[in-house]
Image 1 (cartoon, rainbow, N blue to C red):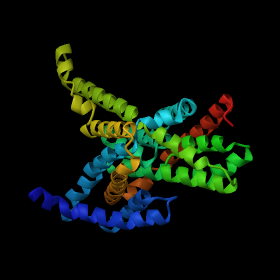
Image 2 (cartoon, helix red, strand yellow):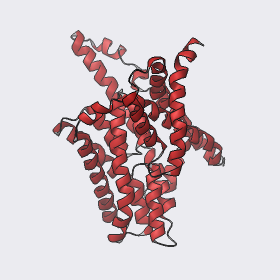
Image 3 (cartoon, rainbow, N blue to C red):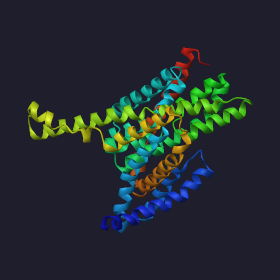
Image 4 (tube, rainbow, N blue to C red):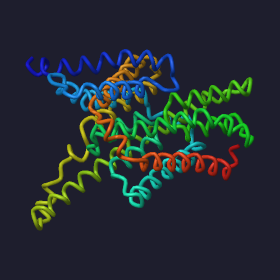
Length: 351
């Protein structure tokens, strides 16, 4: 009970901001509630320096509520989505994800960008924006400022893609399905994918790029599972290596006993996979996906709550002083994804 009293003020503040931003996000879906929340939280943080009794709850919301949101996200991602789209889109999905991650890894070294920030931007750009960043941040132990920076950068190019890509696709003569595949693989956030596809359908009466783009996007989101798993193993291995370096040589037996499955694979990722499997089994049994809609909605709201908390914990001045390098990285990932999507589709004759 005492822990609840300790956490309640900060969680309440984060939730109050989230409610406001939730409705703002519904009114302006191209921006979305999560971005509104992190921006409003950052604005409030500039004048509310000492969080006092709200501090512990805000920290809890930015970590634990974020992890809970990721678990609930699994109920909206049945593995059968992969079969729905089929092998047609998988080469494009895999190519674009690889292009973004490789670009992020190379520029991280060349431009000396902090590794966690580069990882978050690369994963957020290649998979599904805020949701991928939300899933990855706890695994790589990113702090709130790194999450805020990644969200801001990915959001910038997310909006640009939604505004520019329909006109680009029309100019190069893409088919309706071709643009649906392009939007589903080259725009990262679901809201902006649907916005871009809706604009396309409006430009081409009778077209139905929206449905195809949405299915491709959901399939692409499944990449959260293997990528977070690999990152968890990498972080665990790096921590063991660091510990070994600090304590001198280590025997093989000690190295083996030093492995922690919990550290390598966080509980919330296991629960996320379990939630996805439940959704998969339910879909196979003929249960309507609408059954999980309340959980998916709750997941989205929890992400908004967590983003509000992250905004409240963000040093805006420090964020600005961090320079233009992350923006350049985000731009490079954005261009790499778009060019790869168009290139692979062209090679496969999909548009």
